[in-house]
Length: 243
Image (cartoon, rainbow, N blue to C red; front, side, top):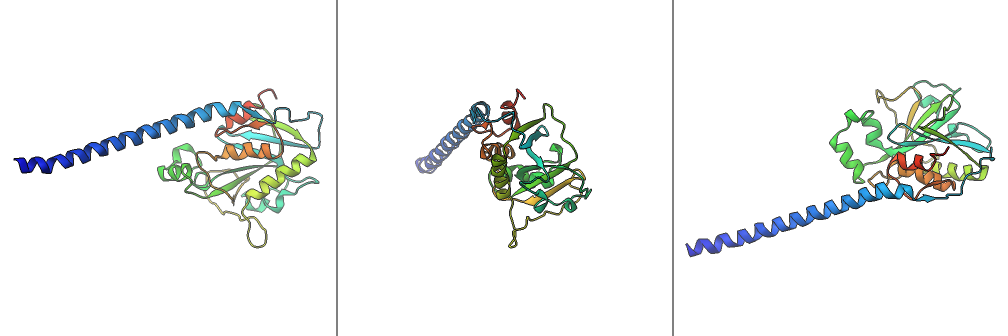
């Protein structure tokens, strides 16, 4: 019997230590999640470039547009500052309609874009890779004939100099081949419309760098009103609630 005591006791101590480690790890994760949730809730209310925007400036009208989940930056397809068909081609869409005047540009996780047209299609593997910086990213572009403003779409008038900064920010997001061309991602039956196209992008999606973080940073890049940081579209639109 004494021999058995010496055999069992070390195992009891090991299991006890393991349980303590697991409990501490769980507590740490809960604390980190709570801090993240606090940041998601609080930081969007802290504005940067509060005084930005000149309502009398009519150089360029851009738009922020949300589908209820993520924000796109909508720009004219062509003006005297930028021709977006150099990177985003009409022929890459199913419609191939070259009469469309605006293009919405968003950045996000490639798996989400190409494998998850609706939330019901979301797979755990896709979500896990997206949250933890394990997947690649893509640009989602959508052509429009006209833009209707409302709660889900706000107009922002910016100067030509500010627009140039926005153009550079977006252009830098595109991956390019050796010839400097954007890299189109062919897609079929992706659940999107006939005026959508996808391109390889720089950067990786994670909990701290989301599609809305990218759009918020785009506004910062051209010196427009934005959040200190946001993971959600609501933070961006909160800054433009009076428009």
